[in-house]
Length: 119
Image (cartoon, rainbow, N blue to C red; front, side, top):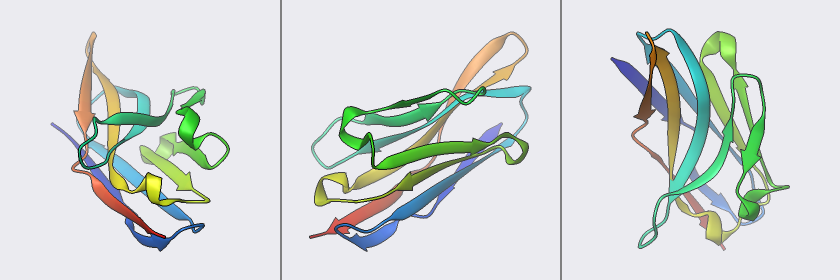
């Protein structure tokens, strides 16, 4: 089994910053893509950013220039540095990862962490 544990969410004023962390643990061969998604009330879950094992990153247009995704492969951890936050960033943020076991990839999700930006 694989577990994803997120931390770092909370309440912040508009213009502020937060850093999310997600630690992946369990039984697997390797971790491929790691990413962050978010879901605001009444909206579908959307990709915020992801990063490959080689460090290639991909961002949603709405967060480009404000958010930075990074990972520490030795710690099986992915981070999301969120700067210049606005009320539109308020959502539950979910960590997502694809791990390899044997010849297959498996997708796992974290439990979500609430980010609330007050204006």
